[in-house]
Amino acid sequence: MENDRFTSGGGSARETMPQRLGTVLVIDDEPTVRAAAANMLSRFGYRTLEADGGEEGLRIFSEKQGEVDLVLLDLTMPGLGGEETFHRLRLISRQVRIVLMSGFDSRGAMERLGGGGQVAFIQKPFTLNELRNIISTAIPPNSGRRPPSRDLL
Image 1 (cartoon, rainbow, N blue to C red):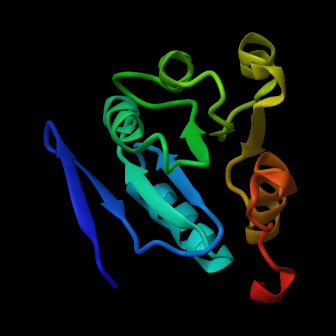
Image 2: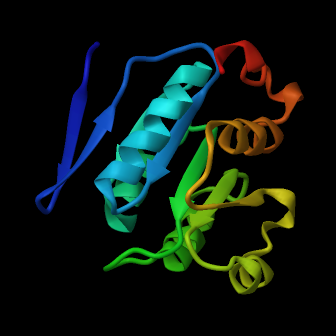
């Protein structure tokens, strides 16, 4: 497996080999959560890009926005937090699809961020099935990519 490393201020991000269904940028400051989410997404057939925080995620998204179909974004991160990262992602692309994730209640954030149907939420910790379901709804069938197969579970 080929891995490219992106670094920013001592941080790191990993890119896995391209696969069939599209590309998901995973932005989370917790390495174990980030790696677990990327591993699950890879099992579904997605290419993943990983960023260890908001600033690095914005840099990667700016460089690769034409390739990114979805951003999986942690709401609670040190430095540039999830909500500010969300707003800056939207400044780069109003059409970016974002799935917010948090171990805390999402109601307040979802009310503030709304997103006009381009935003969903998943509660951490999440299961393989929960992630597959949210990704399947976040990347619509008419995007030219098919949803993850249940056979992969």
